Length: 130
Image 1: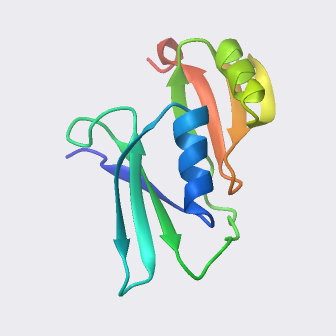
Image 2 (image 1 turned 90 degrees about the horizontal axis):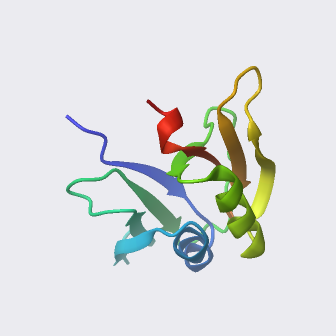
């Protein structure tokens, strides 16, 4: 078994695709409209779906925003340098929720950014995961 994807509902698909591709560097892997269901699915990631977990963005055509709720926490993305990634995201117009620095009660360097729909994304270095 393996984790295939995480799905997020988004209010403006083009805006979200732009954020994940231009600011976070993902690739749009595939996108399909479902006219009978009035929704579009877009799959993005850092590699192909056969070998990598990807992000599924679901856009219901008649919904422009969602309440995020209290159960979802955040996505996590490994970067080479959290300080550099945070500054690059800031320069590209991304919203920084927490600047790069040590986590509370620990030494792992993390940062948090927010996507256009309000979902939080944690940035951390690959070496801090092991």
